[in-house]
Image (cartoon, rainbow, N blue to C red; front, top):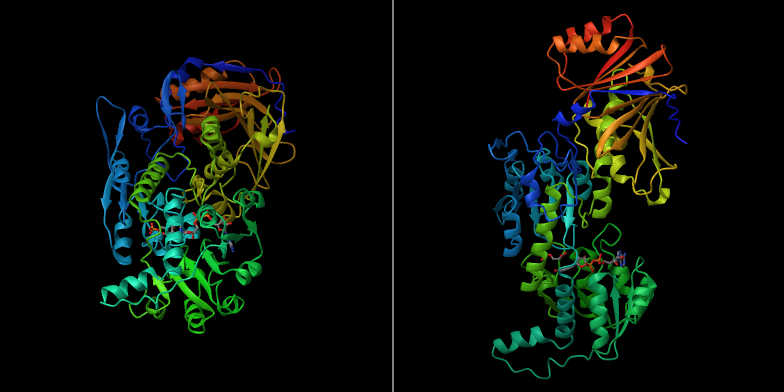
Length: 629
Ligand SMILES: NC(=O)c1ccc[n+]([C@@H]2O[C@H](COP(=O)([O-])OP(=O)(O)OC[C@H]3O[C@@H](n4cnc5c(N)ncnc54)[C@H](O)[C@@H]3O)[C@@H](O)[C@H]2O)c1
Ligand SMILES: O=C(O)[C@H](O)COP(=O)(O)O
C-alpha cells in the first residue's frame, strides 16, 4: 500500500465557491502541444469524437486538447468565441486522393508541394505542423531536425514506414501514423496480376507485338494450378494473396515468424520455416516489411537454396532483395523469372540490369495505385493526422502506444492530474534538478491489470521534465526523454476499497534521493511525496508529505507549514489581498489541534518576492513554498 499515511487530519475548506471562478486552462495534451490553449466550442465543433479529451468543469465544457502553436503563428480573439487559434499547416508532399485533401482542408491550411528536393523539404518543414507522405519522400533525421520542434505528426499515406526515420521522429516527439488497411487489397491484386502476368509472359508478349512481331512459340508460359506458392510475410497483403492464389488452384505455404498458426490455418495455408519455404516453392511472393532483419534477406545464399526455375514476385519492398544477387540468379537460371513492383532505389537507374533483364517484368511501385485504394488511404491518413493534431491518440500510431479511445476518454482528468503532480513534485526538489528516482503509486478499485497507466506515466514524466529543461515531452517521446535525462520511473498499482466505476482512486508521486525545499513534503523514509485525486472531474492535491490538504490544482499554489493557531488564514489572506493577489482556494490540514498545520493557498497571480517575504515573516509560519502549476 502506498505510504500515504496522511495524518488523520481534518481539512478545512475555505472559499470553496471560488473554484468556479478559476479561469486557468490546462496545458496538458498528449502530443507536443504546449503554450497555447485552443479550446472550447471551436475545437469541439471540429471533433467527430467528442468523447475524447474533454471534461466538464462547472457545467462548461472544457477541453484538454490543446495545440501548441509555434510562436510564429498568431491567435486571434473573436468577440463571440473564446480563443480562436490559427489553423495548423499541413504539408502534403506527394499526390493524395481528393477526399483526404478535403478532410484536411476542413481542419487546417493544406499545402500540396510535390517533388520537393530534400533541401526544399528541410526549408519548408519548420513552418508545418504536419507532413503527409507516400513512399517517395524520405523523412530523414535532417528533416525532423529542420522542423525545429514544430512538426507534430508525420502521416504515411500507406503501409510501409521504411522511408521515415522512426527513431529520430520519436526523439523529436513527432508522432508517426500510417494508413495500414486501405491499400491491402490493391497490393494483393497487384501481386496476383504480376504472378499471372509473369507466368504467361504478358508484358513481354505485349512489347513484342507492339514491335510488330507475332511470336507465339517464344512466349509459352507456365501454369499456376497445382504449383507451390510460398508467401513470405503472412500479414494483411500476404494473407490476401494466399487466399487468391488458393482460388487459382495453387498449393500455398507461408513463412512468417510472427503470424499465428490459426490465422494461416483459417486460410488453408501451412506456416513453414524460411528454408522450407524457399526450397520447396515454384513461386515465391514477398510480403514482409523492410526492416534491419529483412534487409537483403534474399541474397546469393538464399537464391542458391531455391529450386532451379523458381519465379519471384515482389510487391513488398525492393530492399528485401539484394538486387545484384537476383540478377546473378536470373543469369544462372536459378530464378526463371521475376516480377517486381518495388526497388532498392526508386526510381531505379535507367540502365539497371535488373529492370532491363529479359526475364524480369517491372511496374513503377503501383501496388497501392488503384483509385479505390488511393481514396481510401487518403481518407484514412487525413483522419489520423487531424486526430493527432487535435491531440487524440491514434489507433494507427507507429511510434506511440495505441490506447483505445474509451480508455483515453476515461483517463482524461487523471492525465491532467498526473502532469500537475509531476510539476509539483519537481518544484518541491531543492534546485529542481537531479531527480533520478521517481515512484508512482496508483490506487484503484479495479483489478490492477485493467489500469493502463501509459498515458499517466507519460504525463508525470512531462510534468517532471518540462519545468526544468527545454525538452517537449509527450506520449511519443516520454520514455525516451526520461531515459536520456537519467530519470527512472517505477510504478505500483494498489487495490483499495473504492468505486470500480473510476479507473483511478489516487495518484501518489514519490521522489527519492533528493533534498526538498519544503521539508513538510518529505516522508519518514526521506522521499518527497505528494498525492492527488480527481474530484468532480477536477484534479486536486490531497496529500503533501504526511499532511492531508484539499486544493484544486489550478493556477499557482502557496504551501505553508505553520503552528496551528487562530488568525493565520486571515493574516496570510490580508498580505495577499494588500498586494492584489487573488486567492482562489484555501485549505488547511493539520496533524492535531494547535500543533502543526499545512495551509495550501491557491492564487490566481504570482505574488512578487516582497509579498512572499512578508508571508515568510509571519512568526507562526515555519516554512513555505510557492509552486507554479
Ligand atoms: N507495392 C506496394 O505498393 C505496396 C502496397 C502495400 C503494402 N506494401 C508493402 O507490403 C508489405 C506488407 O504489407 P502489409 O500491409 O501486409 O503489412 P503487415 O504488417 O500486415 O504484414 C507484414 C507481415 O510480415 C511479417 N514479417 C515480419 N518480418 C518477417 C520476416 N523476417 N519474415 C517473414 N515475415 C515477416 C509480419 O509478421 C507481418 O505479418 C510491406 O512491406 C508494405 O510496405 C507494398
Ligand atoms: O507501403 C505502401 O503502402 C505501399 O508501398 C504504397 O506506397 P505508395 O503510397 O508510395 O504508393
